[in-house]
Image (tube, rainbow, N blue to C red):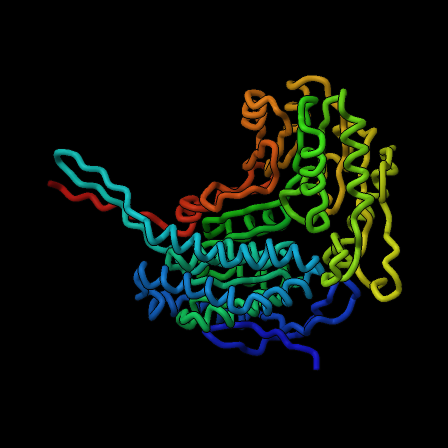
Length: 480
């Protein structure tokens, strides 16, 4: 019997509207049927969240919320295999990647948010005439919209601090990856969250749950991770109500490699930053600028890493690389392979569809693609592709490298590879991005600010930065 994923409203699963398919991108098989939330179900979810704030959830103290989040983290670990199965079925990523990155990080997100609130104080200023102190209160009902590439990781990254600070949430997971949000609803309920504190509505964007949530008059804020165009549409939808938003959007991230870089460790790092999760991470590198003297070495090393990738089922220990999320996304990526050819790019490796055998032929498989011989103005250099791709371009001077890397409408992340730490600090700090790595990639401290600028987003989350978004401060002034 095919599993049915329902909406979760007010502490229980409820019937939604029309059903749609949740498809496994590995072989095109059916994972589940999903009930899309119509406008009435979304309204019920928002009203349930508001009732929770006015009721039992609103009476939770900070200590109560901290204890709840720690129980949720414990339950995530207790139901690790359930979450792992849901994540892998929806995304097709290899088991080790989902195990080490997605599910492990989900528990860490809740513990980090609990620690943040447990040690939280208030801003206060004492003068001879007055005491000023700031009381932080929850934003209220927060709409949480998450993408399909790291569905559980990014869901918990937003939900954990939102709940820690006393908000009630209505989550809209991607239509491509609805399963792990459903399991998380069970976990949060098992951990003792009051009905309505956490709600899940399934569906799509325009004319569906996404639009119904972002335009709902009783939602107090929206946090969204996904495409820049979708972020712009959400901003337009909430503008009449001047709602606070936190957007982590697309990226066209650059890496700069200087001649004194350690070649082996740099190529290893670049391979991770280009090919992890089949390039479907907002922080992945799609532009690589290499100082001319080592350009051929770096290019050859990265080509070798690309050719060593192995496609296969998630549970095959030989598998290094899963499929793209869907046939539709594969069409987009392949369209950029055609654009690269039209722009006269030199293809160094890949650039097609791999032979994965008859059993997996229905999956969304694609070969990686590495190019060179293109200008910085080329579409494959300027537009986000979101696949296992990178354009390699030579440079001569530090100043030129900075100019080329910053020549982008996006501003999410960058990486600098050099053994000259003075230059490394100087160049990493010159990147117009939200996150800049030096001799590494994707190394995260959950307390540090996470977000981008330009087409890559608005606002920052992580540690105190999440606190600032999910709460509103009220200053109290006492005359002495």
